[in-house]
Length: 242
Image (cartoon, rainbow, N blue to C red; front, side, top):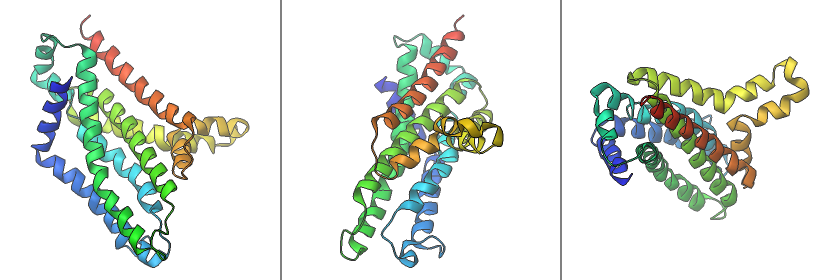
């Protein structure tokens, strides 16, 4: 698994797209927090990173599929996936190696944003006037969200050898999982069970964690969705051997 992980990380960091997608993410969040008059914390007057955590999931819908779209699609197109089958590694090793590589790159993208937290921490009046528990809960929620989107991207890439198709499919599934259920819950026919429908979506659990409320049920929800996507990927790879 480690060899797959190292190969994927090196392959991505050696390509220009890695620095483009990470740079776009950091630039977009930086402009929102520090520059744009409608959202920047200097004009807003409150030591808060809510803008980052409300905007980041929508960026991740495009950034993470861009990271994962080539993982299996390229292997299929070049025929190297069959070569991996001949090596003494299981499908689980291949899948988890690629998943953890994608998740590592997501974490690598988030890591520089801690500078925003420390900047706001020291700019606060008094110093440290920021909801640290809420920020840490939001970061945990963002990491778990990144894990789910990574699992979705890996799954989408396993269905096709076309990277663009994998990207579009992953973006669509990520959007449905994140905000599709909350939109569905707002439709009148679902009024009697709107809360239940909304709880099926990611945004419900993510918003709770963004308030600093670390409920084990929310963490289990994220892990379950990611695990399901990985299981579907494994089934799809096993099906190719039939």
